[in-house]
Length: 121
Image 1 (cartoon, one colour):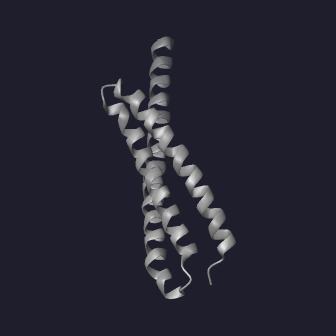
Image 2 (tube, rainbow, N blue to C red; image 1 turned 30 degrees about the vertical axis):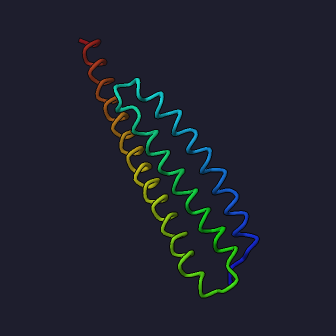
């Protein structure tokens, strides 16, 4: 059974976060264009994430409009598919961020040791 109140709350938050993510992505993409176009990639990814949330919101609203539970499967599957893509992209971005952070720590430690050994001798 679909809990309509929770689905409405989820839909509202997906809509809000989706819009804010799209706006942030557009601003980031515009700012990144001046960084040799490669800087626009994070903004484009944010726009895609925002669009996926907005799509999921539309399917959640379609679920709320349906009275026949047999029609839930199509809208529900599309709702879950959009959220699945959103979370996959977010997960990949988190993994990349952690790897880059770890790489930065390792490089900083190597640079610190090199500077220390240079200053001691």
